[in-house]
Image (tube, rainbow, N blue to C red; front, side, top):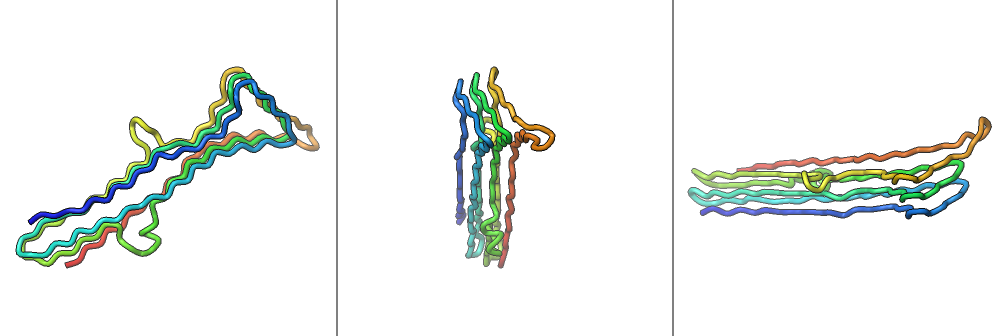
Length: 171
């Protein structure tokens, strides 16, 4: 006999911070952040017993989605300090942190075969996993400062991925 188990986990969540077209914002400080945090993990077990069993387990995880900051056409941002930040984070360590295998096989047989597969995709060809800041044509971002109190302009976009698998086998 042949048996199998497959665990599939997917997520396509996104976050967006947006200054609309022709918006005018003047402040002491402007801090816009788009932070997208995804935590996914999956677990599958293949247990095979008999004279010649076959089986397998697969754990498939896919995370897409974006962290976006946009400043629209003709928008004007003016402040002493301006920080625009996009962060896209993915964490696949739940079972690892518990000290557990997310793929496990156990068998008691003479001629048994077991296959284990873990497949994690963070972003795909058609749907990227990204952090991005888009500043449209005609937008203005101005920091005001002087030598005594310098202005700060910081644009930061980054992705952070941590994905771990642990496989356990037993007879």
